[in-house]
Length: 200
Image 1 (cartoon, rainbow, N blue to C red):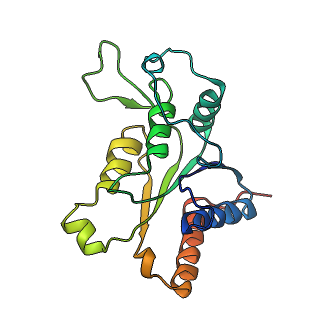
Image 2 (cartoon, rainbow, N blue to C red):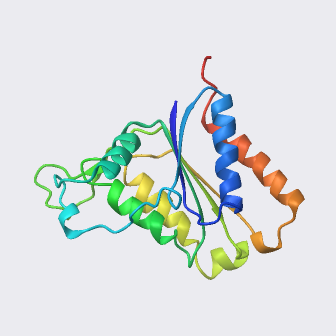
């Protein structure tokens, strides 16, 4: 399988980077082709211009590359911290610019954009790993877990991917080395469960 990993955390020493490394390692060991994108390292430009909004507008080569990859991949893994109940701005901009009409979704003939779009992505699974300093109780009872709604309902389900899994690791600021080791083992187990080994 071809699997795209999208990482959005500015610190290379973050647990988010450790998650991305664990995903990439186990997937490659199991015969998959992995493309890991560290959006901060790649200096991704998250700003969507007015000219780029229309479906058939011209996009730059970097966006074309991301779009072609995401359209063809068999699996998508997104890794980011919970910042104000949202992804970091660089990742939100990546979604804005890459999950384009004609790439990730389209509207039926006669629909001017007021209806429910048809998803176009063919990935067999979408996985999201998050980190947070907020307790589960506060996240679910006070904030109503906005990241679950964003990724599952507003993005992946809408774009055609129904096989979705998300895991929030918490509380990062008080976590121990032993907890993090166990969490990375859990990440590996998720990769094994969702992406069967390729014949090598």
